[in-house]
Length: 302
Image 1: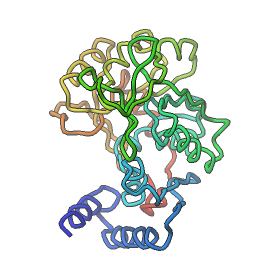
Image 2: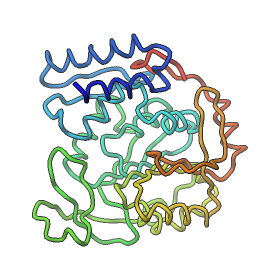
Image 3: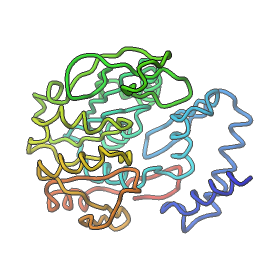
């Protein structure tokens, strides 16, 4: 009961729910009723024409929890997801590093209509990613690269534990028995010929800095508009900020309701993700000129 109350508090405090807690409660109850009556898949409308698949046979899987939270909250990562759909344009490219089930890829390619390049190394996760793309008719809009990202080309071990987010195996975990070997590549080698404007998202479970080290030729590109990067609260987090600052990126806060951008002057170490840009004027114009998008799971527009 304590966990349910904690979850409801998170739901009620979300920016898309604060003014309509009754509807948010109804969505919570409705979804859990569907989970009881449908033991296989729950398919629901998400943003505009985009749909998501919740696999009810894997309710303890962390990836499925991400799907569920986008039903409860509308946009689970509100600031970053709204920033993406307000900033990315149809003729640009979205690069999803650590795509997992492809939530950001779906926003980019289904909602916006941009082409995406999505990196996801684990074969089991790639199969689930294909399912999400298939139901959204995105196979022709998304290029999946089944490789890990790092600072070199080679191979790397990935944990193979079920019902968990797969990740690279650390040096002190070399004795881990349940793992697979996957190919590793660099953004410099994969995106060398990318000519369109693009936005980069990184969610690599603590290996973001290594991936940035392998992207130095990409970071200098003028057509890289913005980076959305996960903050893993590790020692590498300061290194991530340092390398992005080296390439003239600065951290911002985005306020979707007013489409306002502010330079980040606060200690944001507790935030899940950070947004970095180079040109605040260009990004501001992109956000202001963006259309409104219907969030079906929250019955709102942003």
